[in-house]
Length: 116
Image (tube, rainbow, N blue to C red):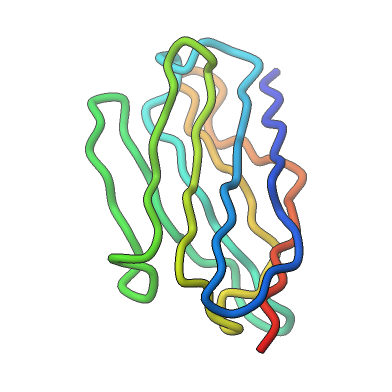
């Protein structure tokens, strides 16, 4: 079983920044990729950013040049640095990890609210 523990969400004004963290209970190299998804009220869950074991990154067009995904291998942790936040970024953000044996795993989610 894999546990993904997210932290760092909160309330911020438009233009502000937040950093989300996702700590995995297993060695980060046991995941083919890790990433962040978000789900706003009444909308489908969507990919925000992902990073592979090799360090390749992928971003949704709506967050490019504002968000940065990174990882700390020693801490088995993935981060999402979010700058210049907009009200439309308001959502529950979920950490996702694709384990080589256990498949897709999800965190419990952390709320990000961006006010005008």
